[in-house]
Image (tube, rainbow, N blue to C red):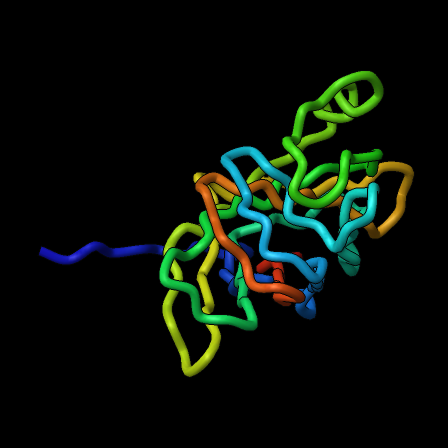
Length: 177
């Protein structure tokens, strides 16, 4: 049996309206050391502020994160398991290779968390690795104050021995209407 759809007058389907934003990307260049990361440690370029993604047209509250992509400049025997935690506002963090322990204003900023993109499976490609990030369910992106910026913290979910000056690149897959 087949499904029949009847469109009555003035009910014509015009198709989906929407599109992808350009890739919003952050680059993290690790410090010149090989200090092992532990579970819950922050991956950062060494600063004390959260990373920033610039999202086009997101301040109209019609943008959704549906996943992401990541790459690293080295091929390691044990790949990192990284969560990119996305927030509507930025805050101070303790810096690279430090345990992410929200306190003070940072704890309050956690109420601005909108979602997490998980990078758990990595594929080796020449002398580098890449990963396709996943989300449990697409989440709405709502930057604060009409800005087009959202903030991210990369948090390790396993022990990882990095390379000195290792470069990580993260991008988000954003659907917009």
